[in-house]
Each structure stands twice: as structure tokens, then as C-alpha cells.
Amino acid sequence: MDGIRMTRCGFLAGGLALAGTAVLGPTLGAGTALASSSPPITDCAGWGARPNSDIVPIWNRRPVKILVHHTATPNGGDLSEGAGYSLARSIQRFHMDTRGWLDTGQHFTISRGGFVMEGRHRSLEVLRSGTRQVEGAHCTGQNVVAVGIENEGTYIDTVPTGALWDSLRATCAYICIQYGIAPTELYGHRDFKNTACPGDALYAMLPRLRGEVAGLLGRNIEGGAAHKASWPLLRPGDTGDAVTAAQYLLRDNGLTEVIPNGHYDAATSDAVLRYQYATGAEDVGMIGGETWPVLARTVRSSEDSDAAKAVETLAARRGVESVPDVVDRPDWQRLLGTGGAPADLTADPTGPPR
Image (cartoon, rainbow, N blue to C red; front, side, top):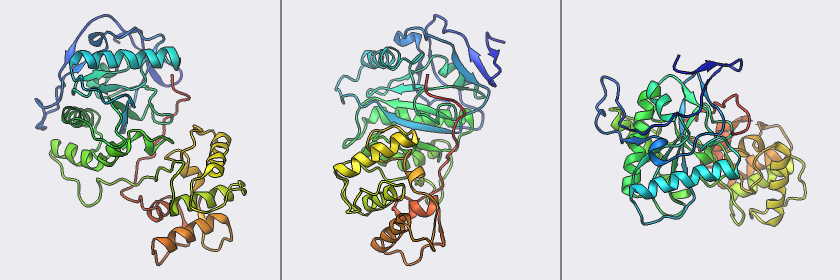
């Protein structure tokens, strides 16, 4: 069975990568119009990867979504293939030598020049089979259920190059075809973690990405399905009603020294860090897709609590006339102004990234 063994954990574990170089163009299934439009993908050997330091786990299941990341590296002007390969090697070096992981964390990397590269060993081979998933290390809780794509650059206030965007769109379409993933199931890293990744500008382009991927697949996304429900990303220095709501929710969790004044000040930042440490979240001081779902608990209209005050604050400031008797996740997102089509919250069964 091609050197693969079944483990007691229920996943397929592949051996160390074999030598060899290939630049592989995807072959799309019958009935699609994309056979010639998917980008070529350079495998690990092609860009000069080191061998993985341990067995790459391969699960006998399909992923159900795609996560978009940015590398948070400079938006350099060298768009050559060689620059892309150098980036891939530097990412692998950082992940293995600094993070202590067995290999590159993401499944695929796209350079600013639009060159698509395999990230973690065997990701391309397994993608082409369409039935299994390489376990990544790109987002805790999503490493088995989501394909991770790193995009070279920092996209806080600038957008990707046209070449990168075209390759991202085509790569996502190919992944959707291979795994049967709906084009609406494309997310940003911040949807599941307390991070600015993939940058404000690129994150804002995700509805467009969903729509364009759907177009490549010959499908239409009806209504507001391209806009997925999410959580606002709050950072030190932010102001507004979402900050006030978060401050009330922190108080609801026992951090009563926080003053609900709508300013993400030093006291709020300190409380957020302590709350994240206590809940096992990444304690980066931002409130994002990892902390909001824990912080924003279910609230009943009859409550006299700080959480109920958070609901009242949002409803009053956003002019919401009626609030349900029970406020749950979709209601919080609507009140926070980030409602939309339901998001896929599936989490994988694995532990920390490796």
C-alpha cells in the first residue's frame, strides 16, 4: 500500500519524503471547465526542501475547508521563481528550527510572483488522491479538517499582487474539486485564532475569493452566502461598542477591574491576556476567532449580569429593536455587525501542531 501504514490513532502515517523533483499540474475531474486553468505546483524536492524530521501523519478523511494565511513577511519586489523557492526554504527553516515542528506547517505556499509550492511533504500527492489529508500545523484545531495556504507578504493595508491572487483563486478551486469542498468554505486564519492573519486587506477580500472560486467551478453563490459569519478582531487602541461589549464580557468572567468604557486600554489588554492564559488560548492580547466564542456565552433576557449588559449595549448602539430571549453565537455575531452565512466550526481531533 504505497508505504503507508494504519496506526491505532485512526490515521494513515506516511514515511519520510523520498528524493525527486516534479512540477505537477492538477488534473481536474470530468464535468469541470478548469482542466487547464489550475496552476502548476512545485513539490518539496523542486524548491529544495529538507527532509521532514519525523513521519508526516496522513488521515483517512477529507478536509472540509480551506484556511487562507499571509506570511507576514515584506512585500518584496522580486517576483521570480527563485525568490519563491527561497521563501519556502526560509519558512521551513523557521518552522523546524525555531518552532520545533517536523516540517513546514502549511500545506501550500504561494509567492508574490504567483508560484505555487507544496509546503508540508506529501501534501501535493495526497491532494491529488482526493480522499485523505496530511495533518498540517497552520492553525490549532483546524490542522486535519482544513487545507492551509500561506500567501507571501503582509496584507494589513495593501492587497496581494495580481499574480498571487490568480494563483490563490485557481489553487482554491482545484482543492475544492479534489475534496468536494464548497467554495463558500474558504476562511481566514483569524476566523479561528486570535491573530490579524491574513491581514485586514486580504481578509476583506475573502467574499470576493469565494465568489470567484465558485465562478471557476461553474457555480453561483446565492444571496449573502459569500459573506460568512465571523467575529470582529479587537486590538489594543481600538474603540467602540464591540470593545465595550468585550469589556462587559470580561467582567462577566470575573475580571471586574475592567471598566466598560469602549477603549481597548492597558487595563483591558492585561485582562485579555490573563483571560486567554486561563482559557488555554494563544495569549497575544487580541480578541479574535479563538477567544470570542468562549467569551460570548449564551445569555438569557431575564439575566441581571454583565453579559446581559453587553447585549443591551450592542442592541442600543446598533439600533436593534428586538433581541431574542436567548442570545447565542449567531445573535452575538449579528449584534457585533459580523453576522452572515453560518461558518463551519468543525475542529480536528489532534493535539498541538507538529
